[in-house]
Length: 556
Image (cartoon, rainbow, N blue to C red; front, side, top):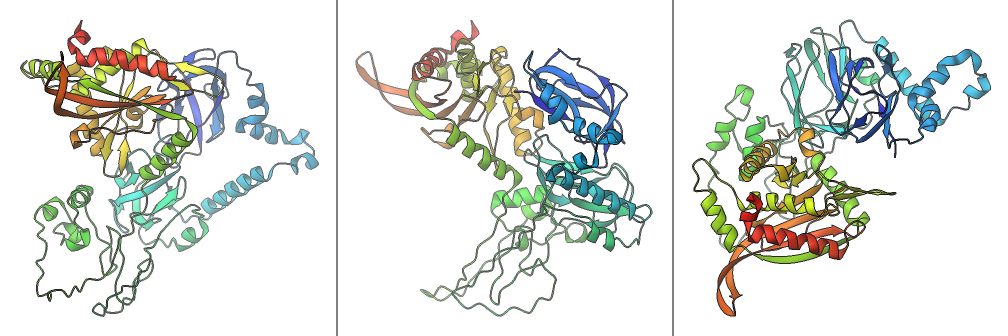
């Protein structure tokens, strides 16, 4: 099915772009990640990469031509596919051109435009009006689109406060997307006059994020007139404790602080008296890992900001004097808003579970030879591989022999991938990410080990780039290091299968008719029955068994 590629917004102030040069021409094959064109924005000339595979069927903007953001730029699809309907009626560019023809269109026909077009036109008019009313030197900064799938973002941390001077290139904030937490830099200079969102608040792409301008400028009218639809500020829910607690003093601070007469429910970034707690990203993560509430820590950084050393040196208060058999606790809870990552995980796993007919194949492999092989391999100086690295390499080699397990389901066809990109599930505080080891079958065990270690480190530090999590053809989830002996996983679509790897367990086994001590590992292959039949999955596991139980064969 053809994909319409619209002019991207490559900076927060970009309204239109000019095609400086096309790096692909009509008829060329395009793979995900290929550079399609160089786009000149209001800031710089930037490379624009494709997020789709296929053939470039149509170019809507020639080199040197300019078009608005979200207008038709190109169409990618299957070779020979008819896209005339998309060009003539389905792309935004053709609609705009038709309207701009103007003089040849009857007024009655213009009035028949869809409600959606009128709504978009009204919205753009409101934005133009808002800009026309901006005081001299004032710039509205909108929520940027920091990944191709990003629909909304959350302000993880403001690195500039209202009243601070901002120079072009300064980091304004850390923005949490559905992919990672990324630094967002300013493209303008001035004084930060207004925060459109508080830390922890979310808003849709293009919503009001901040306002910059000359010091002392009144921007209250700008804030009122700017429509930041999609902003979501969730106040904690009130709770009534069942036990009486000491009466707290009245707090006259403005919303969104919420308090009851006896207790307060607060987020991890809000103190018990309703005041916001400021902490560095590293300090927040350390506190979360240690189960410490930021409101309990005294900050020693600038303006009381909590930093790494404060978390390291934190000592919980020692309580005492509670009468025996007379608990005096007060019921309380924390309300944790869903992160962008958690929202996307929930959406995609639900789609996978309820659209792909899952079935499961369970096996148990003898790991005696693999353990001996790893010990000998790691005796080489400056070399260290894990059992997970062995499983990745063996799986990649087995997939080359069974491309149907390395496939993708489409409505009208099945795609058999002859390249092997292994997604490796990595647990992070907010959920799960799947960085990709590309061409895993061609890499050595040492190379796989080094790449997995690097990607896992980036994942845990929220430094993974979107392209490092895209393009997997098969996924491996390993919980063996947590002592889990066996489990099942949900397929990471558009993959057709996922392999769940358990712990290596020492147990009695039968060899040559004798009961001896052995080491085994259980694996479970979850398959999409639309693409992988039971016999196909079983044959793949037989091939995998040969490699894992005799790992020396992977080196031949």
